Image (cartoon, chains in turn orange, purple):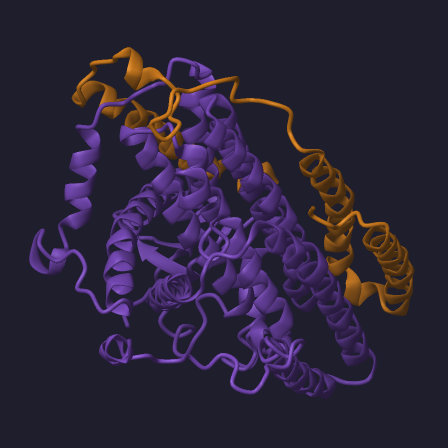
Length: 118
Length: 411
């Protein structure tokens, strides 16, 4: 069972190895002359001011929460889809109920403005 | 076509440890080299194609027809100074390009590139092996899971750079990618439903019956369109290239990256385009199936490559045609249009498969035709609805032309 995944290890080793090589190659061949100006954060030529990481708008957080809710529900579809033909009408009806609940939740979210990006 | 004779022994490669190891290492190396070459020439092809769309010539100086341009670009990047900003989180700043690049390559591992082939070896036996690294029974889950890891690369790159543009770019990119991942996940359920398996090889083979009309894009064009749009958003390509919107965010999450670290992000983006086209072609365009592939298995990778090439050129075409969309509209499209449509597509396919099982296989064709008609009617309505809300005043939109010399004479 696990042997199906063993070949992926070869690709993983090759891609990580090459990635590390590429990562350090311009440290080896490129020049290295740091100055204070060069190491300052890039702000289109202005003097950098203030911290870069500030308070983050809460809408990003909201999107993340909604994503987790829906992603778990999407994952439920996959095993159902695999055995759908064997389940017959039982599978269609049960998933219909699940789908209905999902849709009601989605419509509620839409109506309370959870999907607005203001 | 040469092949094993009547007397020769055929051994399954998976039953032989040496063969499995050699196959894994050989295929991995081949895949990696092909992807790197594909990346290099995709950058060149994109620049040439965009140039032709804009009535320019594009890079054609380095080598014949500019074919050595990627080499020149690579050499230039190797000899660039690699700056790590003072404020950056050093470890994460160095790790982020790797976290972005490795998953985009690993996705390819579960996609078979052709029917199994038999290969002669020096011991006089023939070995049957798959074309492709492996084909586990949860290939679809692997694809969904591994593509999501790439988001970490972007978020961590933005956060570790400690730069305002980079932080904003990383945040925007992650919000966009997770929003479109939902539609992508739902659009991927449709092929799984139709094929009844999460093995990518099974999904591809199920589309060969009948050969070209059996492709799932004809069964459910809506889900195919949603998958292609979501995949486009997933790799942050135009018109969804918000994280790299130059006018607003300089270069987004890779503002502070230079030298080969930048090249890794660039590489990840283009290999991401290739893998995404592979996924789209495998799920909806019949994968390696066309005509004659069953008789000549080595034709499989070639057919696959042609399909991927056409999809990639389509991506460049879209970039040349469509302007970037505004960020709030991007989120609105993802949540309010693509997600409900994807849910409808899954429900449609479930009902179609169920009725075809209960009543008869002929219904599949009927459902496919109805789906195609609805899809094209809906697309026509959706695309022609621009400007319908506000009827134009007579004469509005016409540009008044005033000759400068006449104006001067009048005064």
